[in-house]
Structures are given as structure tokens and as C-alpha cells.
Image (cartoon, rainbow, N blue to C red; front, side, top):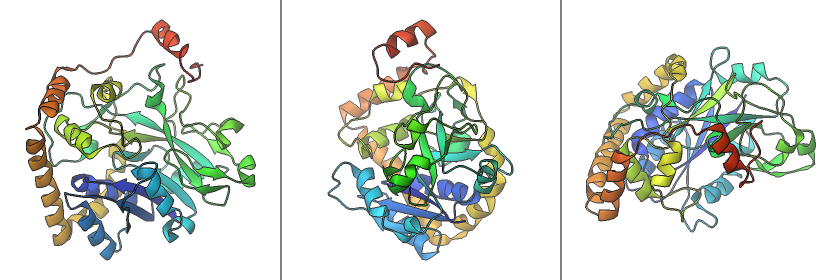
Length: 344
């Protein structure tokens, strides 16, 4: 089986080795990485990893009509790592596939859902929870508190990414789900992360799971959108990959700083990632480039804090409490004014 994960990157070299080792460990045979406008050496790291045969590096220079990530995925559509794959998944560097069933690998997940043509991997959003300083430490160990499994607001907390069979039902990659459905999509069998068959409408639409019921029985997608407070300032500087014209601020932070539930389930994949992590760390060129990316982040944060808007935002992050679950009647009131479905 050939399974390809596609990721777009900019100035995220400090996190690359951990992310790559994890996804190789759980069973992705190919990684297609697209890079643009890197200042921290991420592109150099990707070149080195490509030389070592660890991934495929595809530059994604502008102009980025429709957004950086959309442009990158369009470029990826024709790459052999995509066209020749049996299964495809578009990811971000702050997302980690966390498989609960069997031996925690893709093979185990697919064996649990042998009839699936598409599996929705619902976000489990992990908050900042008071971590101020960026540290050169694994993301999956630094942040281990997350949103509850069930709550009624905000609905975007339960968005998903889609692992799907590359058999022609969908012609193009998409950020959250495959795009350009063809005639065969009418027969595609979609399942959620708890193994339940999904309604027919998911064959052509939908980007969030049923948020009134658990979705993580077999698999979840650990999502670390905030990181340390220092890293969030750098994320704001980098810009968003999809909505590039939207500045990151306290609104984004508030909806994602969930700290209610401890979740260390991803520790079960540590033995799978360990040999890949050791191999990657043993390469002296990668080690140097990683250290340079870490140093760049620290220096860039200091530069950004010379600007008042960044200082003001950092101060607000220090002041802001974690998100809290709102009362059911408040959630119902909000749903009355939105197109998101009622959480039943």
C-alpha cells in the first residue's frame, strides 16, 4: 500500500523532524512537502530530506491565487507521489494522525474499516494552556490538554481532514476533503473516526463532524494550532496558509485554547516514531539545519516584539484565560444564527 501525506510549509523547520518521524512511524510511505518564502531554512531541510530519500520536496512559489495552500495542492495533484498513491491525506505541520485501533498504524485503521473509501479524521484541538516560551521540544509532549470530546460550540473545533482512497472518485486534493467528485463519488463509502458510516451528503460536501457525539473511537487528528505564546506571534507573522488575508489575533486564540481534558494517547505511537527520529537526528546536515531553524525562531520573535501590535497581542495572550465550555442554551442560541447544523 502506498499512502501519501501532503503538507505545505513556511518557516516551520523547527517542527519538521518530529512531524516527519511520527507520520513515517504510523505508516505513511510518502510525504510530499511544498514550501514557499522560507526564511528559517525549511526549504533547505526539505532539500536535504529529499536527498536522503525521506520525502519529496516540491517548491510552491507565488503567485498564490486563491491562497498558498490551495495553490500548493493544485501543484501536488500531478505529482507521482499523489497520482500513484493508494491513499491520500492533506495535512498541516500542526496536525498529527493519532490512531487508536490495533497497533496504531494506518494498516490497522484500514483493516478496521475495510469497506471505507474515505475516513474523516476529526480534530482534537490542543490548547496553549499557559505555555509562554517556545522550546526545542516535541510538540506532542509539550501540549497535552485538549477540548472535550463533545460540546456544542464552536462547531469548527470538530472540523476534519479526510484520508481517502485514490481510485478516481475525486480528481483533486482539498484542504479538508477531496475535491472535483466524479461519477464514482456517488458510490463512495464514507466513515467517521469512530467507524460509523456517514450520510450520503458527505460524498460531496461537509467539513466538520457530528459534534454532539464522540468521533475518536478509532482515530483522531491531534491539532496543535496555537503552540507556545512566542510561536503564536511567529505564526501571525508568517500568515495563514488558507486565508492569507486574515490576520491572526485574540479571536483565533480564544476559539482554540482548550485545556479541559488531558489526552496523552499519542504516546502510544512513540515506539513507531522512535527509529525514524533516531535516523533523522543522526544526520549532521539535518541536525545543523534544525538548530539554525530553532535559533531563527528565537531571533525572529525578538525582532517582532519591537513592534507595538505584536507586543500588544503578546500581552493579551498572557491575560487571556483558556476557553470554557458554554452553557447548552447559549450554544443553541448561537446555532440559531448560523448555518452549522444543530448538534443532535
